[in-house]
Length: 320
Image (cartoon, rainbow, N blue to C red):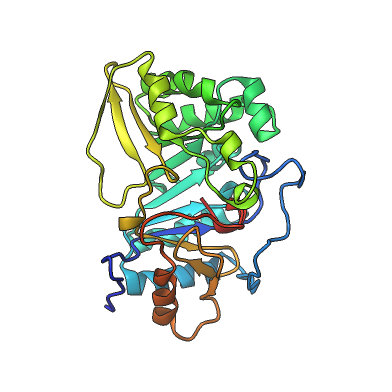
C-alpha cells in the first residue's frame, strides 16, 4: 500500500463525502440574506463531471480506501438525507468494514432511521443550533424544530451514538448555549459548539460582527458551571470539557485554536472532486483521473501547515 504523507506526517484517514450540494434549510452561516436561496452558483471553477449514481460513487470510495486504508467514512452534504439513494449507498459501503458516520441537520432523519437496517450507521452528528423555535427559525429560515428533536429521540431509542453540533452566532443564538448544554447533558449526549467559519459569504464580509469565540463560549458556561478540560484526541476537531454536573461538551475552535497540524480529513464533493483542506479553492477531479495516487498527493499539499484561512466555497459545495 502506497504511503501518502507530508512533511508534518499528515495523511488521509477520514473521508467526508458531500453526497449532494443542496439543503432543505437555509441557515444563515451557509446562505446569505442577499442570496436568498438554498442553491447557488459556485464562485470557484468546479469540474462538474457529475457522478452518475451511487454505485459509481461507491467505486471511487473503494479505490480511495485501497490506497488510504480509511478509518472513517462520513456522509455529509448539503443535506445527505436528501440523496435519493442514501439507503442502498450505505448498504453498499458496509462490506468495506469501515465505520460509516452521518452528519445531518436532522430534519428528515427520522424517516431515514425508519428505513435503515440496525447498525447501518456507526454514529450520527446532528445540527441543533437552538431549542427556541423563534431562534431556530431566525437561523434556519424553517419551522418545525420538533422534527429534529423527534429524530434525536429515535436515534437514542435505537442506541445509535450521536453528537450534537451548534454553530454559535453572536447576538443570534449565543444565549442558547446553556439550554443546549443542559438538553444534551441530561440525555448523556456530547454537544460541540462551533466557532463561525470563514466560508462562503463569510469569507470576506460580516465575519467579525457575528463571531463568538471559544473564550466567549467558555466564559458563558463558567457563569453557571465549574469545568475542567479533557485531553485532546489525535486529529480531533474539538477540544472537550466536563462540567461539575457531568455534562460533556466540545468546542470546535477553527478560528482561535486551529487543528491543522494533525488534520487527517479528505473531502469528496458530489462532482467527484477531492479537497485536502476546507481552505482549498482548487478541486482535484478523481472521477476522471488515471493516477489516483498523484491526485491524493496533490490534495495533501493543499493542507494548511498552521491555520485555516477560509474559502469562497460554501459548505453546501464542499461538505461539513
